[in-house]
Image (cartoon, rainbow, N blue to C red; front, side, top):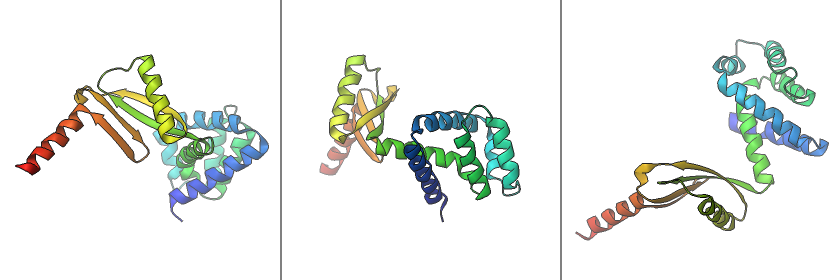
Length: 180
């Protein structure tokens, strides 16, 4: 079984149990804290992915690192991953958990890149328009790229909506090149 499929299955099971138990918010907080620690600690991630370190030791290390920082239910999940020899998937499971939660909640993550900083009204109008376009609540991550000259580029999953001056110039160049 590929790691992506396994990660998604564990994430789905965790989300299902958290929803049934009514502790999704607690699980989200726990996993956000774990995500930060794992992202900052290359050694921890390496240890989790190492086939040389046995599952019991991985579980003890996770318990030591996150004791008091996460709930008992989250620790039980970590122990399950370690027992099933899937501790190396922890970071991927957390990402899949977030994606599934967003999917179930009707939330879509959108990357918006603009040439200049958008003011609050522009951001609000753009987000509202994207919400209508997607039919979902939009969580936008705004960034700047001065090389765009003007306009905005929006990425929604695999879809890119490019309304930048640079893109328009490239299209014009291509169109003129074909006519010549």
